[in-house]
Image 1 (cartoon, helix red, strand yellow):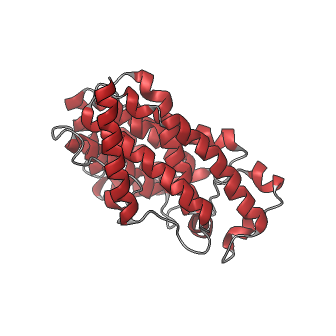
Image 2 (cartoon, one colour):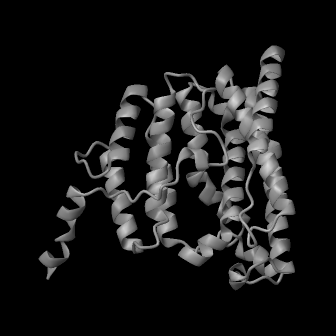
Length: 294
């Protein structure tokens, strides 16, 4: 019987452990490796995005059991750390990128830790519990980009605030779908109890008054993160990255306001092409002013 349980392993070694959802960089709330980033670094930015995207898709696949998700994420970790095999191509490309750039693999390992949590953890006690999750799911994304550019780690607190804000905003955008497909709820249970809202309310066609109060409380805390994030561009030396971070900070503020006015249960609240264009202009202008003032 022990031998019978071991038989799936060769199958996974010969077929990809990745389960692409089809979501691409253009579907995100922020630019990924845009023309603002140095040309020689863009392939490495895209390698990290692809690695994180594939790991996220494994964790979010409703057809996989928690055990299977953890197995596949462990395999991605093994390939990232040097194991041979063609079953995790995004991890293999990421490993080559790390070797070339000499950036620490810790940011990749951190996101794998977060997605392993996603495979098994369905509820969050309070805001602090959610921020601890964002420390591994979101902050490493910006830290990877900063390290790739050789930026000071003094930028990390503002980076972490920005990345956590973007993560929470995305959670709010997808709260109904996450509950319906994965039974996963990122809204803090403490706030649900405080406003007499119920997890089952996420299945309704529109938000109840209690659930709206939860959304507003989470957005209030997120606004605090965005305020902290506004310090980030001024601390970035690379001109292109400074402009890109300024653009992303503006996008985070705009999405926060849209979620204040919109109901993510009724329809997905998202940024418009006009928002992206306006943030690009404003971010590039602010990034320029910060350079001139330096």
